Image (cartoon, rainbow over all chains, first blue to last red; front, side, top):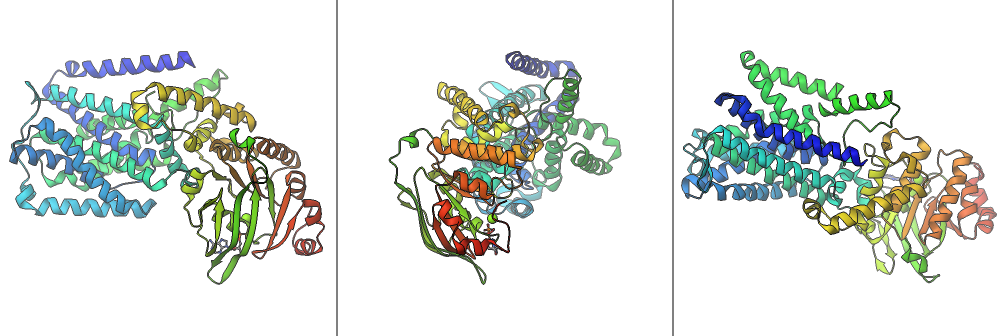
Length: 334
Length: 266
Ligand SMILES: Nc1ncnc2c1ncn2[C@@H]1O[C@H](COP(=O)(O)OP(=O)(O)O)[C@@H](O)[C@H]1O
Ligand SMILES: [Mg+2]
């Protein structure tokens, strides 16, 4: 038991060290840019995973909250001159406020009905962003967004931004790990697994879901703001369905309900997206096929491959197997 | 569970008055009045469709009554939702197996201990002393409950992967993890073989010894007769008899209700 958790800590330390040196191995600005995108997607997927993986509800509205965060910080910095560093928490707060209102309305229903409601709310936010030209400049988008800066430290290129997002990914991974190893997170899993039973044990199902939804939207908003200050231009497209689909694909392919899964899924997604560039629009077909294949053949996602391997390994040595499938309170990166 | 053991006997923990539940044109529970004293094991019996599960659903808060009232531990709980009843100390098992399928047995029990724990997400982020103390305590308590339900050797097994008998015991472990004052068991012996049934009887006895009041719906008359202090009989939603097991099971009306539908001795 003890050596095992020791092994885990070592593996995590090794993984973080590898992530820290990656930009130096990348060697060129283009690859560094891809690393930033990987971390951004990992951050957003980790937040979406709170809803899909821990609460077990599918949401099609996540990209809208990313957009709310991006627009909040972009507008505050370009029109009011607010420093981007202050825009970041504001983006999280405003996205969370939207999440609270939308979650309060939509979480009354569950399953496909909830998913469809989030799709509707997402479409409404997209439409408003597209048409409220005075505030958002509509389809033209907001340009000349200043880069993120902490004092004299400007995140105006890929490498420093990578470290900024990496830090946020690690912090979010810790938040998620802390969640599932707490009373609160165990209530999330109980609600996912069996809501009537969870309620009979004193868990307020609606409040639990609302908490998870708001936390997820707050992180999505912060991710959106980072994106806006990195790319320096945003359009309503950030809220579009392709981003919704991308995030869901990342979470499912990587492994929902785990911490490593969304990070791994983001790597696969960005890697394939770039290497399949020649395939053009066909890429989305390939992703759809991958998603379907994962759901059918590997419901636990890529991370469950590792668990399968470990279990077969243990079986050879007559050791007790650990469960595969949706990993539970052990999280993904423990 | 331990604190309740010192309870003064003959304290009324549950009082149901004129409880009625109507589904469309069907009155599933009609004007039922009954009480349960703290520390008692009360059997609720009656043929299929008598309204036993419907009564449980109302007591557990998952179904609002059409009329009548429910008092639990001196507080009016009529129409209180499920999580409020759970918080107040009413735990239940369900007639159809109900657990957290893709969690391990240990995590099933830990998740179920929601009511008895305090340190939440924030404490977990900070890993403060309160969090570490509570988690260690929770793990110990959860293992105790698994030992109690003879499932400790299955602690790391997914609920999904357990045998039927183990799953039924895990359901009781889940209900106990909430440290209930009143435990509602809906046909816990259904589908069990006689040996498993006997084990269940022992378990209910030990649950009661821990000071938990039990309301038991069961068709296995041997189980009912050997653990219950008192029986309440429902038929077509109406309470038709109440009293000591030996007396109730020899009541001609009760025998008439059971004969021709299913054997009294299962
Ligand atoms: N949700 C429901 N909607 C309609 N009728 C119901 C519902 N639940 C139970 N009933 C009916 O109420 C009656 C009592 O059912 P139930 O409480 O399950 O009986 P028991 O548990 O004693 O077998 C049955 O006739 C059943 O069909
Ligand atoms: Mg029933």
